Length: 240
Ligand SMILES: Cc1cc2nc3c(=O)[nH]c(=O)nc-3n(C[C@H](O)[C@H](O)[C@H](O)COP(=O)(O)OP(=O)(O)OC[C@H]3O[C@@H](n4cnc5c(N)ncnc54)[C@H](O)[C@@H]3O)c2cc1C
Image (cartoon, rainbow, N blue to C red; front, top):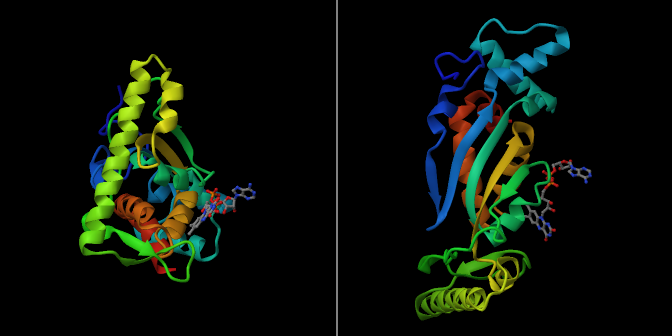
């Protein structure tokens, strides 16, 4: 079996360090880099195919080339790098991830297995009002008794749904049918794989201030992994 010391593939030390690390998002979400293909050099090497060279003189020439590619929007070399994550996320955040059609994914099946009692509940200090003018966004935080009441209502709605779900299973209803009573706050899990070009596009959209906070928190952790594993790509992305 090939291991890190014998592989002939170019690996990223930063990405190797990130593999298998589980980061928490809100109280029950998780982000983990489970696999990757290609390091910063894979992008530079692919780009040099244009003029029939395989490698540059040194790291500095790779850095300059990667920056140039990003400035010029010569983006196809960035597709040579692939990242695969395991994400545990509530269904309402999953629905936003699934809109990024250039990702490949496989989701935990509530047909095969029974759903666990694992639901998203916002933090007490993160209960948000509806924005006054922007129909899509949150406004100021609600506070005091109102936010406590909101948390209690969300908690009891989640719990009620799960109790009914279990009752349906006990009555012999198929898992695929019993799940219809589960709320959008239910945690699911996906393996989610994307090439670097499209991942950076995802990050541009989901790190933006108008992205919903709950997906932004996933994007922030993913961005941090990219920064550590692919520092030259990240530098080009961040500074252009
Ligand atoms: C703030 C915000 C609000 C949103 N609100 C809503 C909403 O209310 N309702 C809703 O349904 N979605 C909504 N979305 C999702 C949004 O419409 C996009 O589907 C999502 O952001 C994925 O972007 P994308 O299509 O560029 O990415 P990907 O699907 O990953 O595609 C990447 C790129 O590939 C190309 N591409 C992909 N598919 C096609 C295609 N079929 N034809 C041509 N080119 C293609 C495009 O260049 C695209 O930019 C929202 C997204 C954001 C960030």
